[in-house]
Length: 378
Ligand code: SAM
Ligand code: SF4
Ligand code: SF4
Image (cartoon, rainbow, N blue to C red; front, top):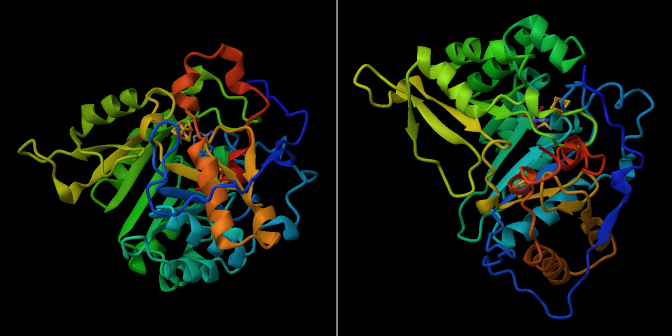
């Protein structure tokens, strides 16, 4: 049993003021940080609450009945989220991911999707909007989400064995209900559905092959995520990380795989397709994704920003502090001023935590300073 590190103070209370620079920063899509990385992807946490208690994310010892979630008035409203999204898109963002917490717990989330779906990229293309969910409310909401304009979905599922999955979500939620949610999403016509499986050595590694067999040929892309040292409460240990390479080798031994090109710069997943009898990728059998956040840092082209539930801009999943955009939005700053503030923050960005992780002393990776993933969005 790993020892949990419980933070001594609430990291959410700390924030940098988002300054409006004296010199305006135009939104021309050319924004780059100190490492030359553009801003292309915005992840928005729409709630810090969740009905699951995955130990790697919201362990129930910490997120118990006394845990102080953000009060309703701290949350960005849909109008505020849509405004922020529009400004980030003006700076070059092309992809939005709604996440949390559990995003489907946010009341009328489909109304927000409706508002976001009308935003176009700088090139006049439709925005790529996706949502990551634990699937528990998907069977109820799939049609509403589709009708609101959502095109893509990611569903998290850590195994097919009920006992393993119930233990991992720690609220006894059954596998069958998540599978029913995925089926509902397929039935209403979602073309692109991904399933995320966080692999924790000794907990659900025996589920890798059953999951691969189950989703092969279904049109659903299964992605394996290395267990990460996010937040300060999950008691992360390196020996619980199963490197993606081992996941690939395990699957390849039974279901031959061949490596495919990554879909776009800044994409987190390495793609491997199932090979047909001719040794080439058999598209009908689909592919898997490997997200090696621990063993192969992909900070070099990380173009992702995160907007927390209460409107703070985080420049890295492992950041310790965000930049308070909500004060600007609520303080009546003009769009130009907020654009300049975002530009200024991004231009100073030098985050590359995963790259630096390997050089850190062993105990800092479980340090109590990082914000929780449920708050800044996965
Ligand atoms: N509740 C939704 C869900 O579970 O899909 C959305 C939010 S959740 C924070 C987003 C993703 O982060 C999920 O796929 C989850 O499995 C992943 N995640 C959470 N904690 C993680 C950790 N410590 N390491 C790797 N992935 C993690
Ligand atoms: Fe909830 Fe998702 Fe975190 Fe699990 S991973 S506790 S479902 S927010
Ligand atoms: Fe991006 Fe931070 Fe992850 Fe590196 S560690 S890929 S900078 S979010």
